[in-house]
Image (tube, rainbow, N blue to C red; front, side):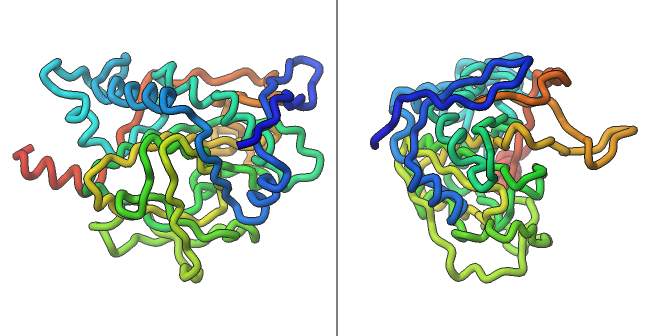
Length: 315
């Protein structure tokens, strides 16, 4: 892959220094993202970096970081056993410096600085992160039905983007992503309802009201990155293979967009802005607001497979 090493200089503001990151993708790739709502960048991370992420996933699962929701496991439990009951850990970068390192990875953020809000005139490449999710997805674990990430993380300018790190080969058999290319273009959020296939999908609701016949699987090799827009319809199916399908996916948006995850007392929808964020490229124009310290805790996400395992074990 050809990469330009010249730093991308984002627009500066009076009270802050721009975070400079390398240019990674071409103008053709950037336009592909704008048109199709996703972009695959193979081999963006090395195998050594992937192994660091895998080891840290085991450290997290073993309770290796101070965290109320994950208690330390005894040495008799192997790393594989430790991660084998986890579908997903929400916000691992809140407690793990390794996960935070990859949230801010220069080459990942280099791509983000080129494509996140490339649909907007005059965008300067500034990007911030608000969420990370570590999916382990062991064999037999469910996927997630059709959805759009922007339903859960609203932005002001349709700039929400996921950066999906393949920590294993992702295949149709072990539950890779499936997408509807171009489904982001209208900026329409489809309604949701409970799905009717609990063996295939986890508990999250399913988006509906569209033709899914053009869906395509996104099979990628270990170390690849899949970037996708927050309005892109996507899903993943059950892991029917015999390997883990580990992924670290972090969510970002244009730093100039407010982040109205929720309303606090006295706030208006037009001004709500959550500040538990990590600037990763360019400038943070709202740095004057300060930042909310992340809680030193994570949230574990389970699925039907976990309940079945607990039932079999008599728990």
